[in-house]
Image (cartoon, rainbow, N blue to C red):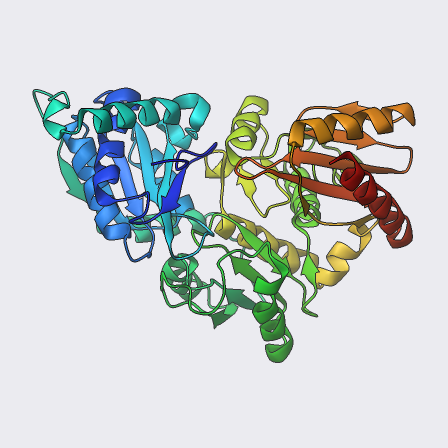
Length: 457
């Protein structure tokens, strides 16, 4: 079981560390330690090979812990969040490993109103329960409940979900052609029905067949190599823009009509402008790795920029705490108050569709004013002692007059450039994002920082 309980979810290699037996114990642990025999609990699953078996055992564990279950079957993760609220559940679980390879699977867990449960807010209790149960070597040692829960299958969840999402699509009066790569993930489950409802939207599908083996490329659009196919698709079919979803469709990345990729912080700024036109003066969230243009653009359009920690559980809680209508992360997560303070790749695509239609400009034209600075993107450094290197980097730049903070890792602000250096949650890595006024300045500062990290290691 080593290492499957992560900061934000439960995830591991199937039949190596994550088995149906373990899924059962996780269900029991969630039911007894977190949901405490209250319900109902919504359960859904993705298209991975072992998701049906893991889902069935998870449900069995929840029921034997006394929880009623609403099983909506196949669903993208944002649909799971919707179902959590729609069915007035006490919590929800979706069986997915998101963008990870086919050998992985796992569980994303939410509490009431789709608020995330992470290692600090419940998954630690489940891990403790599972460890105790495994030490007893017998399921007979697990506490029984007087009345087991029941399970109800819901057949029309997708129709009801798309009815809800249709509320956010502005009337489209001229045709938009959109290249869409779902990487054989869960986007292919709902997008055919979504586009069938909107005749003016013409999708050019790529890898919409559900296939947990991911035969074409990884379902991680944050990696440049996984965007190449949709970039070529957009150019070949003269699309208005392209979008690539991750495996469970809570994230997406965009490319413009020329096939050029657009970093997610620029999309955050673009959507923020549209949101602020409808909700003037609102707080808008952005994660601390985002370009300086994001807070500048939010302020320029009358909003209140709110800087947040990296990670969906942190962003969702901050969004709700601030009552913000929208927020975005560099990783392609976009969060919406209208989606119960959760992330939704479909809602992000809808927002970009609305913007392109209403502004009557190409996506490249819309994004052009946002390309003020030059960034590295996220780079990784493998170091023997993460904490020691971070301290040496901070000491070095403070001596040079830098402003520093520790909201998430180390952020260093110099007069005309900045960087954030954070520890990975799962590996002995430092993750770097650096931005400067020009490409030449960016590269010069990056080379100097790289050399210092090597020397400090």
